[in-house]
Image 1 (tube, rainbow, N blue to C red):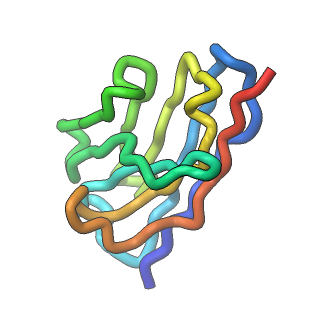
Image 2: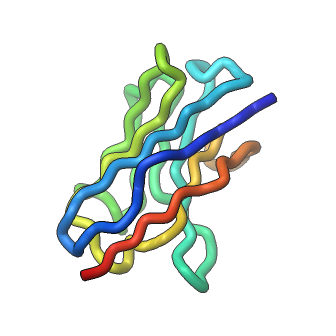
Length: 117
């Protein structure tokens, strides 16, 4: 069965950096685009970033462009998100999702990122 398991994240001060990883299993990772989606406390879901199956093409929301970097290692079936210059508004639960943006069919359980001084 498909499994997406996020790790990383945690607590960081404003301006700091954190990284997230997502270990995928149960499907051929290298053939699917992947995404990161977040949900801030009391708010709706927000798409953050996507990457195509090869990793050659990446896409970002305006709110994180220039600060976050999505990447993948198909040999390890792992998706990554490097987050720099974190701000309080980046605080959220971050989800790893499988599939194209318009049809994200599997989601991880999420990982909390807290940005606070």
